[in-house]
Image 1: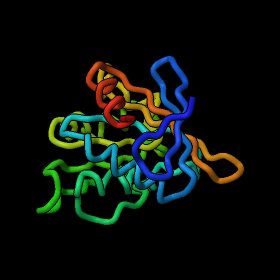
Image 2 (image 1 turned 120 degrees about the vertical axis):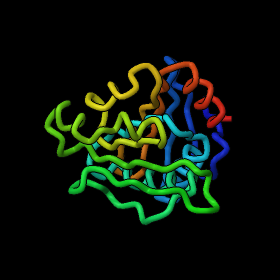
Image 3 (image 1 turned 45 degrees about the horizontal axis):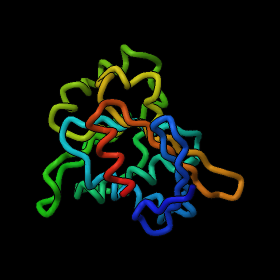
Image 4 (image 1 turned 45 degrees about the vertical axis):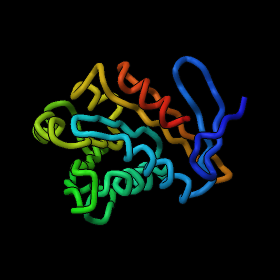
Length: 174
């Protein structure tokens, strides 16, 4: 069954098991979905972005940043590991901590970033975080999976962990 998510250009297919899949035909659609996700984020939220190189994780974070209304250009933090984007005066008041866990070699290096402190006051979005960063909020986080097909369309699925995320994902899809 095909459903509209309410985001222009985003088409979805209900897949059961608490997961919802969508096609993001181009970069603008990935940004638009990210913007919608950013509009429901609050301080204390953890979002893990999963997908291969080129799947659109950093592009999704650009949209999330727009939805939160934070300052600064969003680039992949691969070499600096984490970037903090402060709220703009006209933003929602929630900072964004953008982390790239690709170069982290284990839990000790994740602990060194002290993200659990940031998690209290900011929305934390971790690229390549699945399998490492869940422990920051094991029972309450969102996994966003992105995959790039050969036709360059992105496939997106959402995996909510915790009742709060299940409700918010439902609101994203309405």
